[in-house]
Image (cartoon, rainbow, N blue to C red; front, side, top):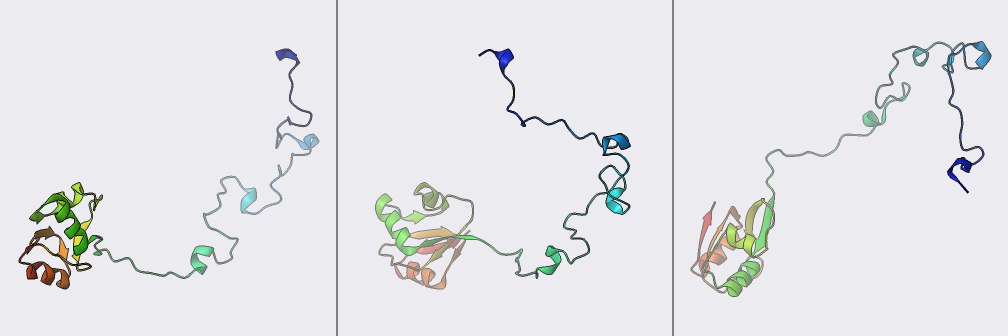
Length: 148
């Protein structure tokens, strides 16, 4: 077998349709466009989502939901997590940098402290928001909170 013996499989190669090349070709006259109508004219472009006059899907489906532009996404950290970090690293103050270094938060979202778990040590906590119960728990242990 040599390169000059290779050829495509039978029926794999077709000659392309040459549209609009006279009546003898069988594809002259209307050139496969049918008679009249927008699709027969030059410059026709179908509008995106057009369904031939039927109500388009994007108009049939009801609009739902509401996106509040003032919504804030928080990384939530519990008091039990703070307790673990303080025990592990022996800290008295804990803030964004300490949370990042310990791997508790990975993105740039705001931080909110919640009161799940219990705190057993005095610690000063710095975050963007605190739940009322978390504030009370931190202050009860003699610690302080600071809102960034």
